[in-house]
Length: 83
Image 1: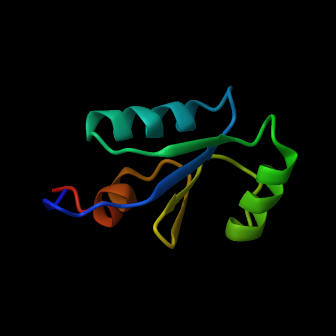
Image 2: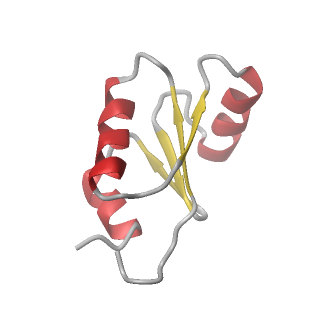
């Protein structure tokens, strides 16, 4: 991450999602702060996620204004400016 760069990261998850756990481990490894929203227990958040992404599956990751569907390491590294 470029010094001074800060991204707003939100991840829509469910408690049983393996790829969600991998994405959160990736954020932890790279010291990325994120907000987690469990759509399994929050119907309104699930509807918001589908509206933003067009997807029912998780994880849906929002970085600033960019939506990434699933755990896509390369896309995350590019969007978060990780070398």
